[in-house]
Amino acid sequence: MMVVRNWILLLAALAATASLAAFGFLSYAPNRIVPGVARSLHEVAGDAVTVLAATALALALLCFLPQRRAVLLVAAAGLLMALGVLLFAAGHGATMLAATGVPAGRTSLGPAFWLALAAICLALIDTAEQAGLSALGRSLLIGAALAMLAGMAWSGLFDNLSLAREYHAHTDAFALEFRRHLTLVVLSAAISGAIGLPLGVMAFRDPRFGQRLFGVLGIVQTVPSIALFGLLIGPLSLLASTFPVLRQVGISGIGAAPALIALVLYSLLPLVRNTVAGLRSVPESVVEAASGSGMRAAQIMRQVMLPLALPVILSGFRIVVIQTIGLTVVAALIGAGGLGTFVFQGLGQNAIDLVLLGVIPTIVLALAGDVLFSLAAANLTQMP
Image (tube, rainbow, N blue to C red; front, side, top):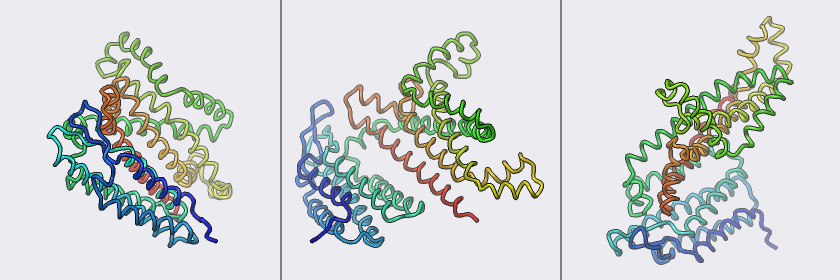
């Protein structure tokens, strides 16, 4: 009797196959206003059906084998190939529809594409986890997927998708908002580090202070982001009207100032918590040895404890950066700019591809931040 040894991979293969068979792969409309007509994968890229079906069958068969590392690596390679075929089919199908349709036609990605993409990505993450890939291995896996996507986009394969058309129509605005988004993330992370690290050290040295601090930061963390952005509008507007010099330097009730303050407040709890956890993880014997060698408390903290706690602290920075990348999207509601501008413009115009123009780069930024901080933390952990 055959026993399923990897239910997640099996369910992902079945879910991707079922979604591609039951739903529209692409949606074609003669213009931006008229609702699109669903087109199946077989209609727009018949050859891809055979490749994806064969890949799904091979992955399903792998689910019955003992899940050794070699089998899992083969499964990861198969999932990467399925991802590449899925992306190629989307670009090829859009090109075919553009050649046979009207010049103003719009080709959007359909529900089958997104469901299959989600199933493949979830299975890939789980397979990498089961295979026990190192931080470098996971980073290479993500890098291979992003490089494949970037290469196809660079070749012009996706130019006939309406998402690419939205990008070409907003190239200058996209570059500006992307820089604003990145600037807010970098500034908030830098300010959070400058505030959070000393607070973490103080909380470690004085547990009573740390208990009160965590209570306050916990309350801040429970406030919804929209509410916190809104709460800052009134006080900052009053300060700007009372002290005009603040308005001259860009501080007002809306814009980057309240967004930056809110992002920093949200970032403090994970950073302070990881700083305390990292310092507590330093072996007591190491501290005693440093003290016995004549080092003062400040020297022990700066030269011994903080370097040893750095991998855990970097994990806190990783959480902060990824969280901030997502929250900055919401900051566009109060005029801070960023990629959220396209998200809310698209929602207002009922243009899903404009929404995706803000969402997809946000996801890519989060993945890049995760990879960079994971690699840095892993390298520090492996250092002698």
